Image 1: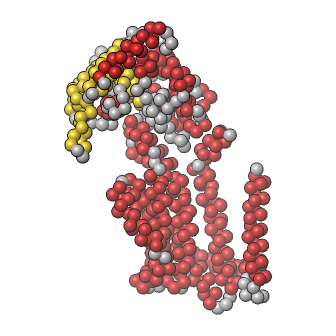
Image 2: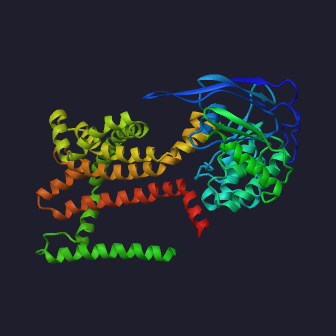
Image 3: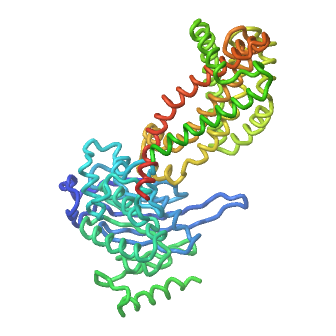
Length: 268
Length: 255
């Protein structure tokens, strides 16, 4: 995997925490080039996807959507550097040096149950000499967890736990936030509240978000752009131009949703 | 709350002592030593000082045997928990080892090493290690693979992973392994002393028994029980309470 430095911007506001817009630099761009993944199975080889290329604009909110088994997780794992691609490259543009920081949010919160919320955030700051408790608290304030700094995960609700998961990812100040179906385990009311908060935070911090889901409505509500994965390729690339905040019951929204559903079913 | 706890504990001890006393009364006079006779006999062996040398010998060998069992048992338990090969490799060893009685090991090791430290220590180690393996195996299996993946995603180093994620995951299994391991070690060790040694609590108890000094035999056991009780309450329990503090707090929060 290749990491490409951005030469267009310097890290001027790297120390700022909440409430600072990181603007429209190239930091946080993702370039996927000719990506192919082939798994060796007992019956031979299985091609998950072949020759997939796309670019993600810095600061944009892009969702990868696909049925189960379409290779969403494989794609996500390659972009997260957990899996090696069979062929092709993933390049990032970072804020400084030639490294980019990725913040991961998972389907389940994946918190250490024996650590408090603040300790869970501190856990991922191993190589950050500037980490202080204030930093953890500031990020927790951002997602409305001010009362819960020293609580253990088991003392929180499912939605609050996922908020801590999001806080942990944000706290390392990543250029890119990678979110793997983060709301699919939550009840719809909680999930909706978290989606709105996520959009608020994204607009405030201006990070690139690469989001994976199988929920079309969620994808349209959140994204600038939807990549549809299936048949071993990105078979559709749909821009969502609805104004924010988006009302899922509005006529325009439902029209876009119907269009997306039609396009999503085009390959079956 | 606290009062209830102590009342229950004292009640349990009183019931136990009463049962003991009833058994004493049922037997012909003087044959089965009661609580008072045992306390008197205990006081004698404590006052004469003889108790310390033998207790020290038993403790030292129990501890050595337990350490041996723990090292072998933990190693097997870890490889069993990590992969299928390890599981298939270790399972027959553990099943066979579990079925061999400690007293048989004591006989075998005494034939090989004769009297001394090696025979009872080795007998203890080989008898106890499969119990440790089983506990550690379950502990390793309980490590959440999602937390491992999370740690990997955030580039956590191996040493931090071990300290902050792996050790707390296996801590409950580790405590059970230590507690059971020590309890079984001391039982095997004292058994082995019967014919593998001429020192130790087990040796002195069986010696007193063969001389019909039943109260002295009972006293050796009683003194040891008191020491183990103090170890449990003074070291193991407080340590456990500290390690699992997060659980109590968490439970309290849910209420």
